[in-house]
Image: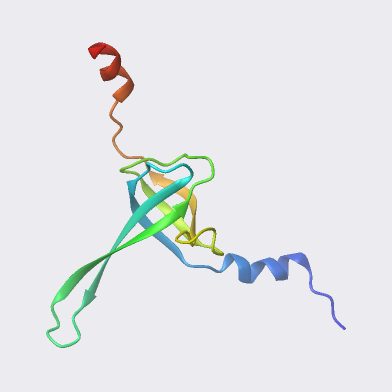
Length: 106
């Protein structure tokens, strides 16, 4: 019986779906809603159609925020809706300083 090294075991695990999308909600703790837009051609009319899908993503460190472009990877089911996890923040979105404006009003 041949033994399998750890590097050979890890190879299929890292071969997962990786998608880039835009964070549309960061209101829940450790959860982000990521919108992914793709273009496809209609089967009959052959018009190019933009389709949007929303994924619930696990963000352990709460490092992404609304407006960020992120890379997500498929994982085991983490909750009823979460099947993806955050890999990295590709590009940070525009931040609005809400703490500064709240302090000025008060």
